[in-house]
Length: 240
Image (tube, rainbow, N blue to C red):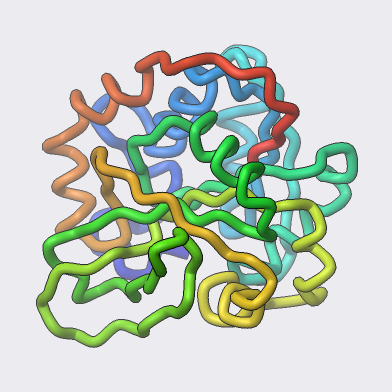
């Protein structure tokens, strides 16, 4: 619901926050489309009709969009579980947070996930100040071995970049109803194969007025990155 952004965005769903001349969610759609990923499921909740009104079926953006609308808050895992009916035809799928942007090659992330054959792959990035993020602990085999909650201490750390590849079997481990990927599902699945691939490009999360202001300053760079072509792939992948 973007409570921390209410002072600057009182009546706008956070993914539709304007960044330059377009919405933040439009940047994410551009990034996917420019890398040949064109089948999208948008998991919506708060002010969902505003999002559907802006994007429709996606044809004008060069993608095909379906919607999974929650009538009550489900959390990050619950939203994925609710979208299960849209995911039955794929062996794995890509998931992006709607309020963060990470510069990466989606095909590389998908290939990494399929090589390791785990339940989940998390795109992670190193930041100089991980104070408002939980951090991810990874061993030398790129396997996630633990998570640390926010400490409130200013220090560098490896954080969750809000982009994942999931094997479809992960849905068996997500209950119906509200649940959190970060706090509930991932910690339970460490023994079943959760991996991390570090990314070295731009990362921004618009969850606070300060970081939203930073996104405005970087709008030209974000747009350039979102429209950059990477190697094309023939992956049967459905983003959520």
